[in-house]
Image (tube, rainbow, N blue to C red; front, side, top):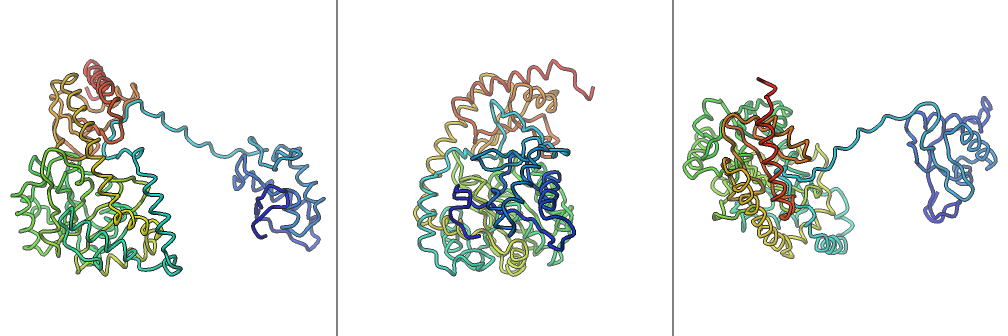
Length: 475
């Protein structure tokens, strides 16, 4: 049925899939009852879901309205439907014989959320983004609404090549930029391309994000942990690990927060050339720096052996699902082919909007605003920790969106997490990232208001004290 004013006068036409056998074996009204009853019992029609009006369903099925009226009345009597004069018929909130599977109750919202690596999505520039979406839609051609190049919209790839060269020192041209649907997809595409090229083992940072190891393994490669210290990845351990490639966060290591030192950068580039290997540079939050000069992208020093990976998740919002790769020529065809097989291309309307956003200078303006805001929050966090946890050592705060808070030996990270949870304080610990050093908390300041930081840190300190007086479960 065409869209417009529905037969029930509501302006909506609700479609419903029912298949009637007209061979006379079973009355049509009984078939309508049976199929609706079965759909509600199975959960195909959820509690509260609207169903077509009697007139609407009769027209869809090509039967008399009286048959549908009688079927709805019977289902209403049995408790499957709610049928009221003047209201749209709906599936009952507690339908007949079999209920659906209950969804788990959502976790309570933390009073103080110190989880790392999340930006302040409340500051997403909605008005500017909406303007860019409108401009993009106004200028997109009919051809732009098709599938297009799986590597991404040419206009966005060109804008990113310019932007990344300007702010991160990335050396690339638009043909080598691939737009993806988030960093996880980016890493997966590259790992599958590496596997196809004959790689077998990929070095990953320890401590590091467990998702990276999972993505490497899913591509059929072996993730090999290589330790990180105060100078970043221990490059001298790569040969011992037998790695064919390495994934690292050189500008701001996650979770330790240290940059890869100049000496280690030189050593890594030497290793890449000697082994003819590939590095994947996860540049997840390098735009946020406070007390140091910008650290240029590693890719700019060896563009033929380093894959550069960035995204809008930390700078704008994870919901955008826009990320990008600058790919060396030897992997480009394989990565583009993997992207084609993965989803045939990231959403084009959003890509055109992001190209407008970059061209209008909106990302630069947003980052300037957010650097000042995040720096103030970081300073508030450091001051509050100095007052309430003076025994702690705070590190990794020159850049990024979180601090590493080292505690004296003897503290139990698990007990602190539990005590914080009872206070509805969300945080993470180094153990969650395969860290085996001194007890360390990870406190993010991206998504917590500045005014909430001091009372939140007071609760963290209270959790630390409470955990210290509670016997460890391992004792």
